[in-house]
Image (cartoon, rainbow, N blue to C red; front, side, top):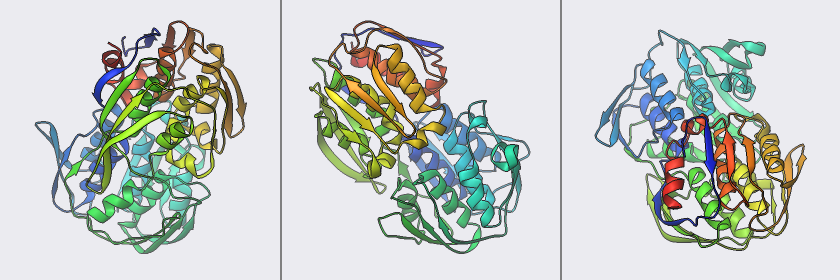
Length: 433
């Protein structure tokens, strides 16, 4: 396969052996941003080399953070709480995590900056970050009234207080936490359910004071200093999900994934697959840098339909497209609900997933906030061609579909895979060899 513009995958080959998936993207971004604003120097091991993380690294360097490569590791020398005003526009590429977290970070700094990205990122909404930050005193200007990039930020002078979000979003929460570092008061933040807690874990590891109630409530005193801390980035469970589903739906598969992050706010894909009858075992488990990590063994199993929604969605929202592929090969109906967030990702992922399944002969109904997939068995999807809509997760999900389809699948517009998982084509080939 080639990871240029198209990926073609033929069915039939079981996935076997042992793989190590790349470092977690969310933790990779945070390891650069948090250590970049901290006091001291830190070593980061296992940093994801994808384009999204490279965008964050490039932007932090423009803000005066010294980031050097040392063998297989990255060494970050923090700015001690004060960033340098950038001389040029900060280009976040295709990375929504980069632009949203940096917007929060810059809002708390006494400087002026402009953030932009590629055509896909410039089409994604920023209001969920800029509106609450504006309420704290941040000043923004940009397209659609400062709700879309390019976006200018004039930071400083923030007063944090009580905020309530209608959606559970780790990006929004983290943007506000980063803004609080340069603000007065106490951030008292509440979301409807607990979103990913990588930021809270890292804040604590870096010596910050915060309170969590485990239900979506968070209190963070403003004006705190972070101390740089070494980080071992675990394998990304979102990347592992593609192999968990591929092995589950392909007969003869028996695959071990080493060192995968098992943070309980991110492990929803495991619980969804277990509910569908997947044969996945946690072989070993340990903790590093406050993050739970483990080895996973997955074997082919006969899957069945289930319901995936509610509080489970924030723990697996990025994995819904590939779980929809699992659902296509599961007997009975699988219903995905409470997934409106997927309408505003790199693509409209609900529409893109539904269109791809239909292109391969799948039976799917698109709901305003979800999908209903009527499953079959091995070969339930025919071969054919799928448009990824410029979305890396859609592209990889339909490569996984091809593993158990009745005929080869050609996925178009796949250069985007490099934004999160450039090794994906080679690892899929090696697992199926």
